[in-house]
Amino acid sequence: MKRENISNPYFTQEQIDAAIAAAPDHVDDPDSPYDPNNEAEVEAYWSRATLTFPGKHPHQRPFRKAKK
Image (cartoon, rainbow, N blue to C red; front, top):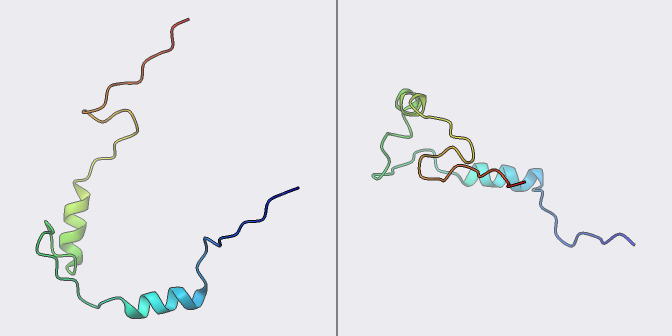
C-alpha cells in the first residue's frame, strides 16, 4: 500500500501573489557588499563569483578513492 503525503510542498498561485504583494519595493541592507537596488552593482558583484563544485573547495579534503 502506497503511503499518502500528508503535507503539500507546493504553493498556490494565491499564496505566491500574496508574497509578491507583501515584498518591499526597496531593500536597505547595510551589511551587503553592494546596493541590492542597483542592478549594475549587483551584476558587477556577481560577475566576479566563482562556481565551486562539491569536493573542490579549498577547505575540503579531496574525495578519497576506495581501496581495492
